[in-house]
Image (cartoon, rainbow, N blue to C red; front, side, top):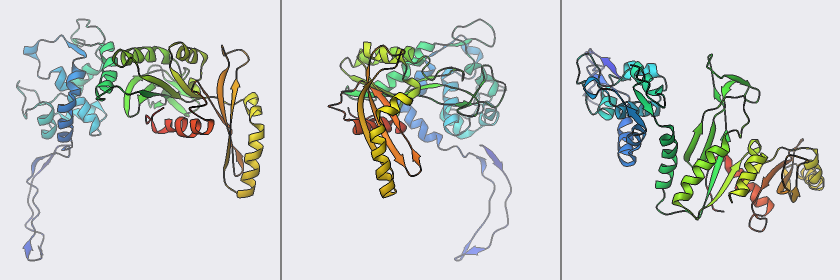
Length: 364
């Protein structure tokens, strides 16, 4: 944050024969010099410029101080520097480093304005509807489809050539709420009021982020997002193999059938039940005996075909992990379309499925 410091002390003694003085006449001082590094990254990626292109600005250019590109860059850089709240910008709009980086100027063009925008102006940007309604507050509109495709476009452009295969990780996690926000619901698993956004990653690349209420299934909306993403990817890489990876919240008949129909492989966690646990009773007994003998966790794996009583349309390959830890049994299951010859049970579980916690793409 910018800081004004004035005054000078007479001195602070001598160190190794040199006089030490304490001087507070630094003028405008900023702790946000990290923005200079972000500036160079943005020049290469043109990210803020491309994000700004997803907006339509209906304001009179002669009557505005801050362009949409400036507003977008200011907000993104501030978040990267740790200023998440819009109210922070009532001070940040005077920050010399941020102003020089974002707007390329240290003073405003119009009288009574600051080099950067305040919270009210940025608030209008963040609440821009998908169509302009002509009101004084909604002259900036955004294009949802352009935003969605931009994430995938950046991912594709990061590759010099088409990969042979990619792994798309799906996940749902909590976005905690601390007020009376619209659509808030209590989520028992996370133990609080939250939203439950859907995320889709490929390695470190974010491909989709969909805000949802917490009273929804983890897989809700995933097919719509995947259809859009897969279509865009295959338009550029028609021969790429795609694998979906997710926890048991996504092992739903609709999603698995869609994958099979569109020739996409998947490996999903599968919620355990008595029928599944019965399939690995022998392996669990062996793991328990080993754990008792060694005092260390023991694992066994079994590969089998399984079908639910009524919810699945067909039988599918399931891998069961029979694990015994000291004092605790830990059976787990995954369901997949991947071939057993290429992916044996243990390797499939430990090397491929468990890697989802790191969201790192790996070869198939």
